[in-house]
Structure formats: C-alpha cells, structure tokens
Image 1 (cartoon, rainbow, N blue to C red):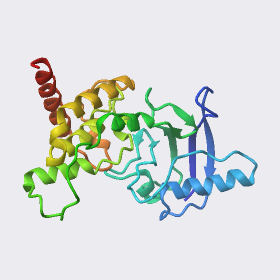
Image 2 (image 1 turned 180 degrees about the vertical axis):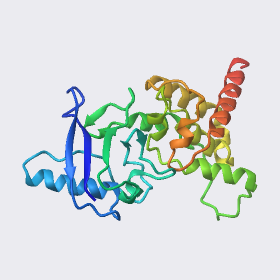
Image 3 (image 1 turned 90 degrees about the vertical axis):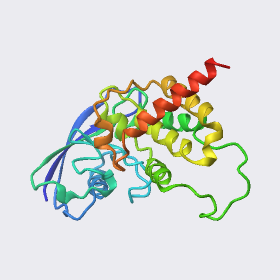
Amino acid sequence: MNLTLKVWRQKDTNSKGKIEVYPVKDISPDMSFLEMLDVLNEQLLESGVDPIAFDHDCREGICGMCNLFINGRPHGPQNATTTCQLHMRKFKDGDTIFVEPFRAKAFPVVKDLVVDRSAFDNIIQAGGYVSVSTGNARDANEILIPKEIADPAMDAASCIGCGACVAACKNASAMLFVSAKVSQLALLPQGKPERQKRVEAMVAQMDNEGFGACTNTGACEAECPKEISITNIARMNREYFSAKLSSNNT
C-alpha cells in the first residue's frame, strides 16, 4: 500500500503547530497503525528529519496510551478498537490519512501527537481508590456479589483511560471516564463506605482540570474503544446528587 499521511507536527506546548505531508510506500495491510508510523519514522531518521512523537506502550489495547485522532475519529475508523489494534487493511491503497493529537484544553500537546493526560491521573488521585480497611485478601468467591451488580462493575472497570471520550465530545467532557471510575467502586461492597466522599472529590477535580460539561450526544460511548456505556454517567449523577443531599442535611 502507498499512502499519504498528513500529520500534526508541534515542537512543544508553546509552539505553533502545523500539518506536514509525508508519503509512505510499501505498507503491509497486516501492519498495525503504530507499526506504520514506525516505518515512517525510520524513513524520517534516514533523511535527517526528526521522527514523529507519539505515545505507545503495550500495543495490545490495554494501556490506553495510543491516543491518536485519525481521519477525524479518536483511534480511527474501526469501532471498539484502540489505535495500536487498528490495522492498515482498514485503509485503501492511495488513501490520504490525517493524524492529529487529541484536542482538549485539559490535554495540552507536549510534542507532535503526544498530549499530557495527567488531568486523568489527578482525578483518580482525588478519590478513585478504596482507602478504608477491607481486611485481608479473600478468595475470589468468598464475597458474594450478584451478577447484576458484578457485570456493570466489571464493564466500568474495563475503562483504560485513553481519553477518546474527551476527544469525541464537542465540549471535551470527561464524564464517561469519571463515571466509569466512580461506578466500578460504588457498585462493589469495598467501595461503598467512601462512595459519597469519592464522587464529590472526583467531580470537583474534573471541573478543576478544565473539562467541559456533558453534551448528552453519546459521542463518547460511540468512540470508546472499550464500549463503556453512558448509563455510568446517569449512575454518577445519582451518586453525586445523593452525596450533595446528604452533605446538606448534616
């Protein structure tokens, strides 16, 4: 496959970026998108040009690092797929492909396609954990949790924090990410003692980081590589309102 890549290049956070055009040739359709970028970077290095900076780690759809905006969609054209699991067979010979970083005030560009997503880390540090004593580790089946509770908790826990929901939202909202982290703990016995404190702290930190409000369009759910449901947002809102009512009554 021969392709034309139009890639966002930006020296650092404070520099002005622009689109650069790069032709790539003899790309195997069995390559992943990141492997194709590796090939391009080898060509750039051989010609004395700085390689394109992009985030990656596990390349197995687990870590959430490969946050690229490809042809106007987070992670590219294939649903429920991270960039590292997107293969070049999804494109056609001769295609022009636009590659950009995720765009959000809370995700400033570090360099080229790399953005700083530490805002997500700050939200987790605000309350996305269990700090109360839950005793020693137990066997998996010792704490009986009904399937109708275990299933949505596990689904919410599958969030990898990639930021696709933020990139897809026209307001750059982090509601899907935060609601998934709130839900996975609020549903389980170990997380219930701190559920009110947790949701208030995480929502407050989300607002402090500069994320926008939920648009209710469902774009976040549609672009999430792990298909996190927006029902988690409704659950988080209920948790938040309940916490606020309790706080006001005490």
